[in-house]
Amino acid sequence: MRIELLPEEVKSYIASGEVIENPAECVKELVENSLDAMATRVEVEILKGGKRFIGVRDNGLGIPAEDLPKAILSGATSKIRTLEDLQNLHTYGYRGEALHAISLVSRTVIRSRFYQEETGKEIRVEGGRVLSQRTVGMQVGTQVEVYDLFYNLPVRKAFLKKEETERKQVYKVFKALALVNPSVSFRLMAEEREVIRLNPARDLKERAEDLFEVRLEHLTLEEKPFRVDLLLSSQKTSGEVLLFVNRRPVQNRKLVEYLRKLTGKWSLCLCYLQMPPYLVDLNVHPKKTEVRLLKEGLIKELLSLVLKSRHAPKVPFLSQETARYQVEPQLIGILDNTLLVAKHGDYLYFFDQHLLSERYNYERLKTQADRACHMSVRAGDKLDEKTARELLRSWLEFENREVCPHGRPLYYRIYLGDLYKKLGREY
Ligand SMILES: Nc1ncnc2c1ncn2[C@@H]1O[C@H](COP(=O)(O)OP(=O)(O)OP(=O)(O)O)[C@@H](O)[C@H]1O
Ligand SMILES: [Mg+2]
Image 1 (spheres, helix red, strand yellow):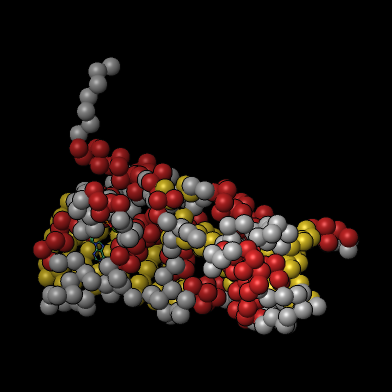
Image 2 (tube, protein in one colour; image 1 turned 180 degrees about the horizontal axis):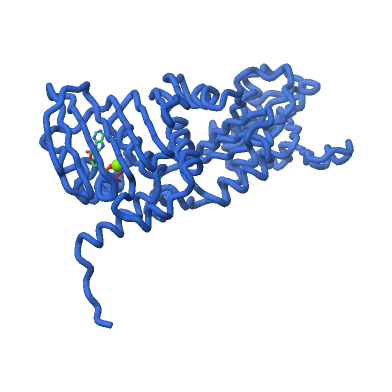
């Protein structure tokens, strides 16, 4: 066989398949565009699971009338200009392929009014070709209507699933985007019924509680440069586990499995990870959803740590501040004005308050060991809660966490697992 180069048009169709395979992917791309355009209101409508019709309207910035026909060209994007932009990407889009791919495989109508213009413009596209353009009166924002997905690609159309299955996929994508954009109001109509309506929420927790109609527990832990926020239902629920990295819905099968193991089959678990972008590889998947996380082992450790704190007993002595779950040692109390009792990770610690304070002065103030000793709190001195906490907090940052400047151990600790075992309980 001779090798021939494919005509551009055929290449485009193949590429479009990498962006759009089903209605849900179409909804995802369109809603992401709305969010990129800073919409505060997004409405989605589908008919027949999206196979017959998908509509997305927003009140975002709109597209300048002059640019509208360009929006459906391959590589048409307002989001990057240079290679450098590509590395500092804060938007959902950058390939300039989504509208192109959609308009190639459907009958599409796009209406948009740019915020600096008095009127809107409408284009009708079929199989990638612009059939008509006209000026229309409309509010600022964009409306995209997608009819008859894959009408011109019967084989791909045949690969679509049952309406019901496609509809569920749409819900899933819609929910995930709503969860990470709490300040945006969202509405989803399916088969002429309103399925989801979300008013702007204060924060991620409020949005998630509105969406799932359950109370959620919030656990958080920050270990620079990572931050984990977990929202968990205590009642038995659908048992969904959803993962977000830097505020984007993502897929990572291994982490989701790990979370499911930690949280149990029935618990709804929303996991929001924040980490520096260079530790996230978004480009392993052309659809930008499957991510690879560097330092995955460390992330797992953080997840298990934050979840262990979930069942930590709340001792009255604890102020609200430390009752939040942090990596910081949790002060439980002070024994005999001598020992600071604290929980940290899987251990119960007994710190000698004098030795801890000595190490603190030695490291913080860079004084001599003897002077540090002289300045320090003594055994028997009444320590206030604030100072005790400050000592524990700093202990984490000590160069030497083990011994005082004279070499005596700072603490004695007990593994909680052993304690539980003694009491005949599992830890
Ligand atoms: N809802 C919208 N509001 C305002 N502008 C939009 C909207 N949808 C699309 N656009 C404009 O059309 C361009 C093309 O959109 P398209 O989704 O094809 O590409 P992209 O978002 O830049 O990249 P990607 O292919 O990764 O989604 C965008 O860059 C944007 O300028
Ligand atoms: Mg886009």
